[in-house]
Length: 96
Image 1 (cartoon, rainbow, N blue to C red):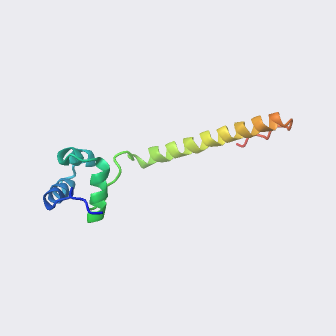
Image 2: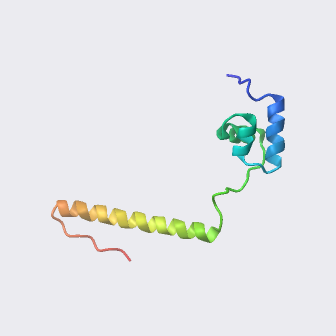
Image 3: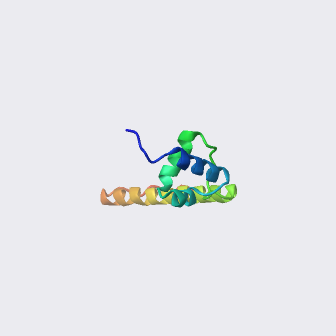
């Protein structure tokens, strides 16, 4: 299925704005389309990818990842012991 949306003119605008480091949302607003359409077309055109604006300090990312893992482990430990309570079994010891 061929789309008539991505004309040569729109593709040129996308490419120039992308190379000028404009955000996908800003490009989408200029082209009256969705951000996903812009990202998909940029990918198909082979335009250079950019670092995620969400990921900042690598140390902060690692701290967040560790905290999430610990939280998941605590939640799982609690769920297992609640199930063991229901079955009349002793609790498992908490892991350090």
